[in-house]
Image (tube, rainbow, N blue to C red):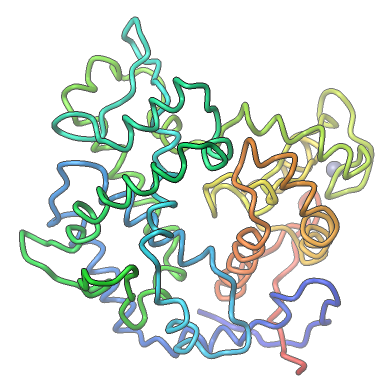
Length: 384
Ligand SMILES: [Zn+2]
């Protein structure tokens, strides 16, 4: 990992990147052997673990998500940071679990005459997916509506029980034997405590963990014989299971048009109705880096600006403006207008943005400015 420390102007608005600890130091604090062990264990888990259902992939995914969705502790070293992040309540995991399965409870339109909710289990359908599908039939359309509904509390209780009977204490069974690399099995607690270095590694290797979990999950769903009839090679299963919800995304457009006064977030020129000047809702932290729709992560941009940005992180000045627009000035309005469609939690969005720029800093990734122009991310110097 090359690092080129150089001074940078401290931003008055955005607190994260300018106050982040030196990345060279923070990655050195969790030793290389722990990081290699983390990858090795992940490989073994996927090969040696038993997966009769998809629950364990969801748990792996949930652990990784939770580790990056927490705020950065900017003034502590990596070991202390890791310790602060190591306690995860079972309810945090259960909520994340429901969020992950929500999209899977939609009927899939494959080759069969009727749409069908894909099985997530080698036997009968998983209880959680059945419950979620039942709630959809009662007219609940989004995860936001589900959380506000009268069913939410009982769903949590039921899912918590399933979760403790199933995946939580089974994920770390390799070839039938407990190997508790991520967290000890202490069944008397309402939380788990990640072993030293694990939270750090989930943050460091987030995209690797999540893409492996999603791949194996998709393969598993395709491999259940009961799903063969509907899948039939038609459509893109991973897009269905894990894609961004295009229909919902359009619903963010009116609010963003109002907030941005009809102008492109990136170039500040007017948005038009067609061609390259047409308005597109853009994931500010690109989907390729954090594949979840969060209400505060959307901005409105020209199609041409959006296409030029692709999967890059936007330049520092864009990040500062995102922070000002979506967190400082309009967080409450975004939550009130978009939470029926998306998860809207401004602190989660702030954490994700800080995490993504911290990784970019560690990897020395170029940041997109405009067109084909990029800037190199500068290593922040703490001024305090
Ligand atoms: Zn533009």
